[in-house]
Length: 106
Image 1 (cartoon, rainbow, N blue to C red):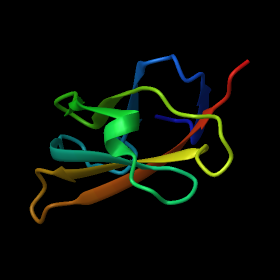
Image 2 (cartoon, rainbow, N blue to C red; image 1 turned 180 degrees about the horizontal axis):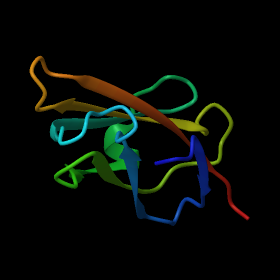
Image 3 (cartoon, helix red, strand yellow; image 1 turned 135 degrees about the vertical axis):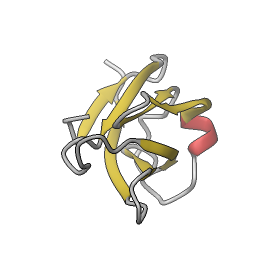
């Protein structure tokens, strides 16, 4: 994902991706990935904001997850979604990418 922040409404659910290709060597692929989320107060909201059953990679250099729900309330939004991945490189490379999710009802 080239963006650092996106805005959605609480009803919306869609897939976002973190692209690690700028960090990885040619031919290097992701072999393990995790995605977590915390609210603006630092509470773990991974199971409320992310559909963990959709966490996966594209077989190359992107990690994807379906985002859902969220609240516009101060102290909750914005959320920080963190993508972690490990690669097949020897020694293994580990990468992290953070994205802010703002929930705003129009």
